[in-house]
Image 1 (tube, rainbow, N blue to C red):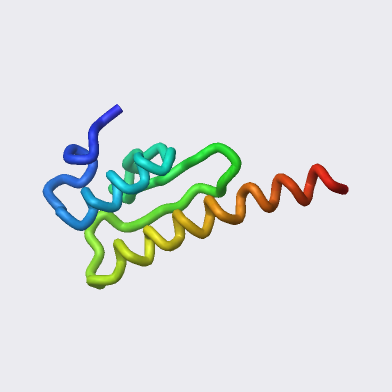
Image 2 (cartoon, helix red, strand yellow):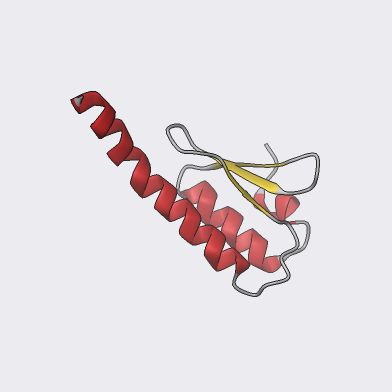
Length: 82
């Protein structure tokens, strides 16, 4: 599996996002179109651009990762209760 530096391709903001995601248990890979795909068992896949024009894009992606991880355990508990 490529490391964070290779996946970021020189973008410092992306490298910190990728390192955060890997530390939280997400798997990160590039799509054929060059986007980043974050996957984690029990969570929906999250896609983000590799060259964001908005300075908040990496923060928004990090928030999406946190939100997805928080919602995944709740969804599995609800389905097992029913």
